[in-house]
Image (cartoon, rainbow, N blue to C red; front, top):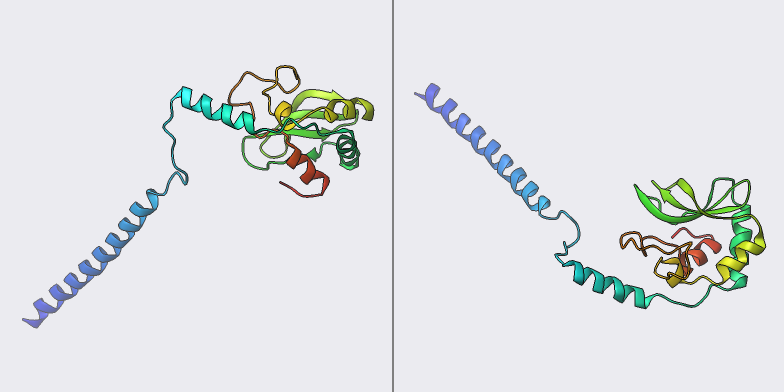
Length: 179
């Protein structure tokens, strides 16, 4: 009799332990899956998104960078290695605008995958050209909202104000910080 009952009890204990572990793993995975995506999804209409974009646009500073900051930016970029410069985002896919030193001067370009410069949006060969251009720029003009600034302007709502150069990013670069 014990030869039959002991294996049945052992089998029941094994089933109970495996079931308890499986249930615990399933509950843990189920609760973890609920945390994705790690941010709340926004269900907004196009009008609501446009309104929010306009609110953010109106918060952008229109204060120009100024000649001194632009000159410091040129000088720091000239100390960078060829192919390097101001890249403020290092992640996958589109990383916004960057300023890259080339053999001929400085280019403004889109950065892909944290380090790959795209084609030149604009090029400056001399310090005078660069300083004249950037001294009049502001967070607002560099964001792409200002049609009077064709180098930065875009009608693409995704591209506008998406990881663009800002005074804070430029100041961080000048101070040697990665932002």
